[in-house]
Length: 262
Image (cartoon, rainbow, N blue to C red; front, side, top):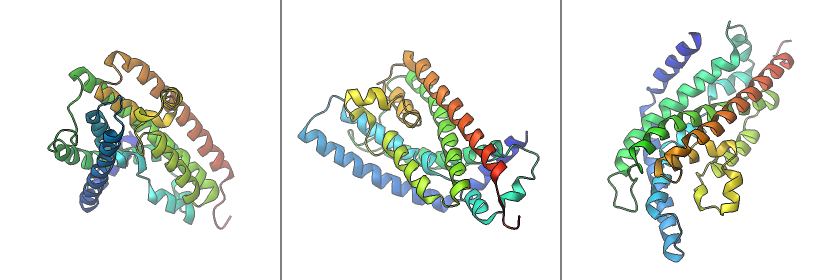
């Protein structure tokens, strides 16, 4: 119950940042249009097997949920660097679960506040530029749980990043490396369906591909709805592995943690 309370409080806090929401929508709309223009130029020079409409849809969904991937709990990082995290260690809750609930609420609400208006605007663009409707109603229905499992994966990855910060006290190095891997291998820099087939067989098994690539392919119909259980299984496997790894790292850091003053 305490974790749900933390989750609700963080949701309400995110609702206060309306200016950041508007800025985020404008920024991601701009980058979405630039990326689609680049892919359209690529298609004119060398047509691909994937329709440009699917690529445009892929780009808009990636941009709409960009906040889900890169939002971080700066307050926690500041506590680690200042030593104020010692006060949180006195709470009668599991610290990993406490901050997992916080970051999940932050990523969820931050994404929804941007995604809904942004996708509505993207749907009004001309064909080949706009986001298309799901391949089927069933495809959309299996897309939603896959997106939820992707959220669980990315929250677990974020807590692993924080665990490294507890050791180094500087989040920039490890966070920069993990963010680069995340953006590249999740399909945000280049849609994974444009990679060579031999690469895709490996990349799509990585945890990063479970964040947005797998849900988007269910949405566009590249993965048939009948494959949803296989996708859920891969996502669920990585959720369990990443959470277990994060918990072990947090527990190890807690035993070795030294706060200023003793």
